[in-house]
Image 1 (cartoon, rainbow, N blue to C red):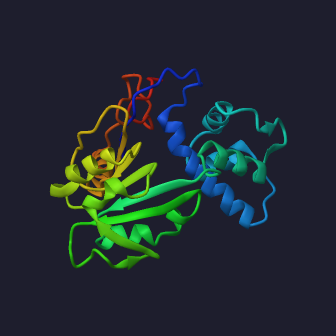
Image 2 (tube, rainbow, N blue to C red; image 1 turned 90 degrees about the vertical axis):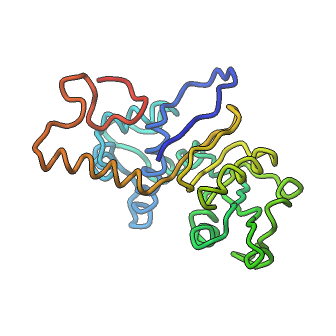
Length: 239
């Protein structure tokens, strides 16, 4: 998954690296599972082992948001989960518009992940007459050209075919969407103020095949000897 972030607005808030933001939902999911299992405290070492990172990285990630743990005791599981939810904005209302109500669009609209953590399906749109007017997840699918006069949204989701993705993005921008999650295999052109995040399974599979090929050839991890961490994401600083 890749991101083209929105332009900065002169905020004085402490900068949080994208890699840290990407790990927060993983931490949150682990903590939710631990709470369900009855765990009341968790150490950075335990959380790191479950997340596949180092304990130092866990502590560094959390230090960007405040002091949540006690040395020798660890973190209160429920409190830490609540703080991560707050950092992720789960305590706010996030209306979402989905464009392209095929199999993927329907699956997302019906997903528990979209109905939790503050997300709310505010509108569904398509251009197919056979789909427009249908009710999906309790929401009536409307014609795409009605979007500009429809409900406002913080996040737009594009699950339309590649050929229709740019038109969908244009409609979302015109409707005031501040960010777009794009599942279509196409790079979008949007104003700098709009954040775009790309989800492309074929790209993720190619990344996996790259590392598997290096492993099979007994090659060193990418960047070894060049001062680059094997687990560094795009834009991360050299070790």
